[in-house]
Image 1 (cartoon, rainbow over the protein chains, first blue to last red):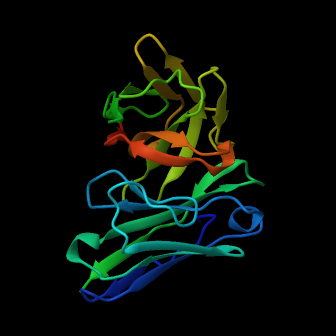
Image 2: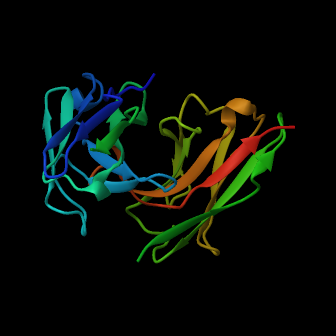
Length: 111
Length: 123
């Protein structure tokens, strides 16, 4: 069981907006630790798409938006495109466990 | 452009030691700001952080694996390595190396990642 909880799957039609949630606890997200998001296309390594709540690495389109409140964080993708279909993982640091933790992953399907 | 590349055996027998190396290009394992990590992903499952090494040689290992894991670095070759002993089938996974970076170590994000290497534990 992952320290961070994500929905197993979300879906949306091209052009729509989807949101992926990441629920933590007072020892990770709620402790003020940064939340980062990764996109993993089938058969490839995870790729950083959002860091420090709402900063995008170079090359990541501004259709990706991050937010954080209390013990939860979210990744929103607007103007959904077929190329966005992938697994998405959130990540933070757990102060109690002393380790970096990931969510269980959310499979985004573009209908 | 920073690139990481894992290498090592793809098949390890139960009870033996898994050994992997990550070769870094475009950056240095000697730099003062980054933490060089190993992360694994069992087939069809999520990600698990294994541990990191810092330029000083200091390491931090996930407590769940601490008794079996050693991480080291060869600065002359710009590489860092993972050893996981007494492996079982539960250690079958894709193993990734990644660079950790953040304003504070606890806020480390992993970027970039190596392509990953599948290690199967089986007799």
